[in-house]
Length: 492
Image (cartoon, rainbow, N blue to C red; front, side, top):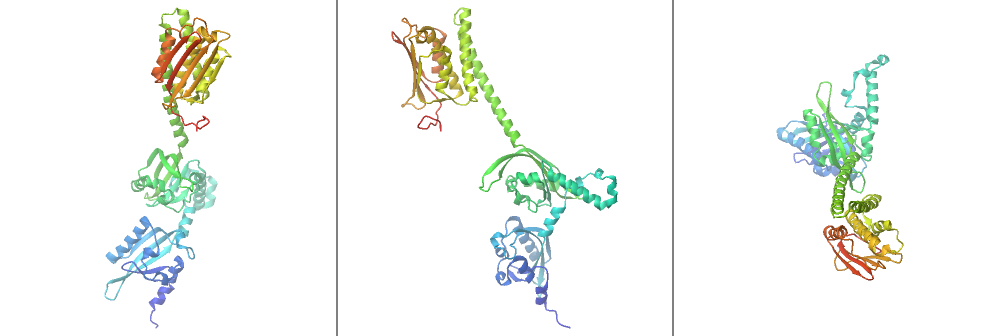
């Protein structure tokens, strides 16, 4: 009887095997291992295992710990399934694809009974893992038994279950919410419906772990919640979670707000075998809610400002010693001036408005063709626009009653410019000519007081009046919000 040649037997084994020394360096590799990894024994001999087959993270630790367990105990150790990148035969090593392996480490002893080598045996599970994911609905325990029709009995129990599995798989696949199923403690995707794949811009999910497929969730610590559900069986829910997802190749992130629910998946014995996850996007709803809150806050602020202005107008008009009818007319005209300013701002959605537009609208009420406006493009915020509207209403009303706008040959020039010495300060000149021979100063009482209060109080400015035979002049300067303007005066 021929003596058994163990070297020949090692070479003939159909499964991939690698012999490692106790320092985890490659001593030998059989042809099956060479075929599975695309590496020759000559290339591998003497190399550190992780130098020959680089990995990362938990997979490296798992293989190293299994090897060290064999070295320290002298007992075999098994890894039932591990995701580890090893290039297919003929592939560049830099393009190693993720592959699933079963790994067995077996101690090899010398004649003295001392550990000499460790046999590293692997089985490539990649295809069977993908096939299992493709045909398995790991949340089948959620399927109701009431689905079966009477004629299903003709198919036999196996046919009924297959039909139900296929039907429910199709339902989940087409569900409008995002649905996924994960297997095991490493949370490997075994199912991801169309909505989820589309939401993640076509990422490959099935067969990959949560950390590999959606690293954004891992970086946020959400994998700990997956672990807790898998270990304890307690469901988890979080609403409106802000997830910065990378959905484009340029590496940029987009904020998404998502409601997420996780539930354990149990087998027929009640043992937890995975996790069922569902999610719905709430980005539009949350952003709309925030916009509404901002709008309500802004509306509240504007209403308060408007009521304050109305209160001030009413106090000055009704308690200024004027006859009731005159007080009512003054009050009505000033409320109309406020209304005109609000109309201008509403047309621009309460954004910035041009100084000239505000002045034109307020002076248009006096129906005069003798008004000349001259100045650069200046933008006002809503509060400034309302203040300017009330100022020019008072000046216009005074001119229509006592000054140039009361005479056919009268004229009015309004000139404004930015102060070159003081940033953000606007200089304005109101100059009337051809007014009444005996021009009264700005209307006593409310008009003058209101002008000063607005210019000096609200706009942090100054105002001066000049009266002479030629007419009336009002000089003002006040602060405005700084705007970025282009050379032509437009906002950049």
